[in-house]
Length: 253
Image 1 (tube, rainbow, N blue to C red):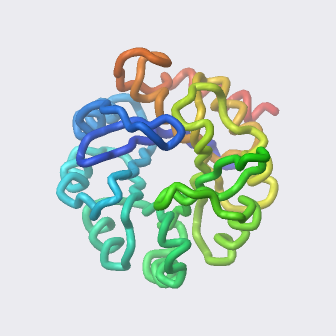
Image 2 (tube, one colour):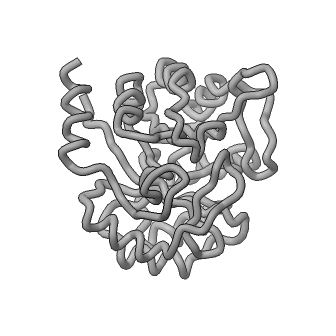
Image 3 (cartoon, rainbow, N blue to C red):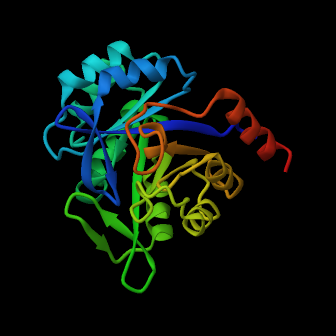
């Protein structure tokens, strides 16, 4: 039994740290490098960093971040070529999150897996409910749902050879209302890949529920950058004793 992982998920836009609600209306949170320095002191095992600017990869910003980051760093955002991936790995990124390229040019992912190994490639699976309440794949690049079920899509990604899934609920993002447990169950029961779930965490009980229902890990957004819902910015992370309690409860099931 692998130990579940709990990690911050930080969003970048134009070099600054932001937070969205349902993948929209990014609000300024602060300086990314300063946030990284704070997380260094909070016993964080790893960190997810996603640039949502829809521009070229901000290599200069990433260089500043990796110089200060003392934990494994997983980066996503505008990764389009093998050369992009090489530069990111050279800067110290441990894993690369891919999304749009999975639709546009999956052959590059096959090449990347051959070069860097499947453990280095994380597929971001963004999911949003349609008008009838059915889970559908969401394309962040053009803000549209695709007529494809998450299970079908994840099975395609398995065949492609990716090493991990970042399962992101668009409807739950930034809401503090709890995670989409039905979605988590649906995906985790139908894949052998590790699934990192993200979107909706409002407290440690939400983290535990996600892990109990199959998540290999949970990525925390708002909970790590705000003191409370609709309150001020505060860079924080669950205390180590809280995390250990979550893991003990999971292991004792």
